[in-house]
Amino acid sequence: MQRDEQELTTYFADAPEDVSLADVDLERLPSHISVIMDGNGRWATRQGMERGQGHIAGIASLRETITACVRLGVDVLSAYAFSTENWKRPQQEVDLLMHLFATTLVKELPLFHQENVRLEFLGDIEALPQKTREVFEEGLSETADHTGMTLALAVNYGARAELARAARLIASEVKEGTLSVDDVDAACVSSHLYTADLPDPELLIRTSGELRLSNYLLWQLAYSEFYITDTLWPDFDRWELLRAIRAFQGRDRRFGGVKA
Ligand code: FPP
Image (cartoon, rainbow, N blue to C red; front, side, top):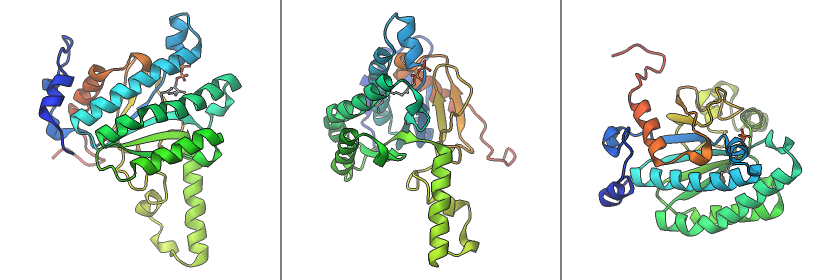
């Protein structure tokens, strides 16, 4: 991925004491960074605000993460925005999130054009409220030709539902005779997931200190490096991203083998 060195240096100027751009090797960036954006509600509660204010503040963190990844030259950024289990939240919060997704996407389209970001959705977006779905579809078609970073937003996403869907798709191809049972291997399963055209995440970041996957990309995260930070999502910024990349670059990745 191309990067503008001048823009990059400017964007990461004024570094805090413990981390700076010089701490990361730009030639060894994770090609796909994925984030579980957690802690919006707690952030708001701690500030004496409604949970919704935490989601609104979380949008700014996502925006900063998108810009930082574009500046660095990351190929793919994915983010868990709404799970298949999140429908269980109070209706008012679900409605607010759906509204925020739609309005944010409309508002950020100029950024996606400016930064050449291609949008993708992971999950069943057909089941979203009509307005949100329409805006998402518009976002998809408006950015389809962009050749820069891919931003994959997981909305109404659950990994178990995704794997069950892949099994259904594969079974129907076998039934129709277009796929042989012997050809159903790991690559075949991968090609029937929402992420079919994306590399697996190399780095998974989860904010707010929770040590679980919450039904997120269970298949794709098989060999990803995890970075868990206590920082709540609305406090996540470009520096925390650099800390995560620095930690990733310090890991010894063996993929089940032994060290060379
Ligand atoms: C988790 O915090 C966060 C979410 C449910 C996702 C919401 C994400 C955003 C609003 C970011 C913007 C996204 C888009 C696509 C515009 P939580 O509510 O689970 O926090 P808690 O664990 O502290 O309750």
